[in-house]
Image (tube, rainbow, N blue to C red; front, side):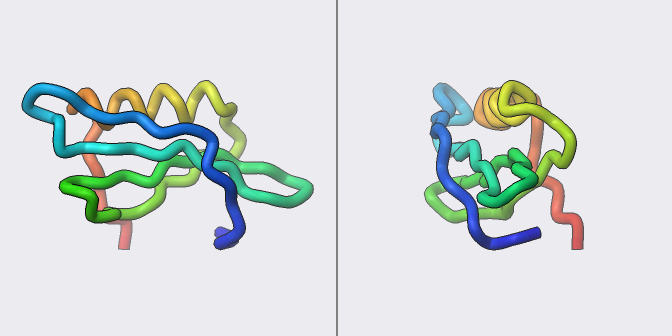
Length: 76
């Protein structure tokens, strides 16, 4: 995936997940893809891209991450 993207929004966890943060991103170019960058304790864990999905899908994924419903899974 390209490294050129823009930040759309940011979400923060609370309670037992207050150390989590997620940024909703969109790639730049003709074909835009949305994704989220996940953090724990202000350390970036990685970016998940959701090819073929909408901004709402990425927002839902970010919200699920900061609420503890979704966890970061290393893919490599």
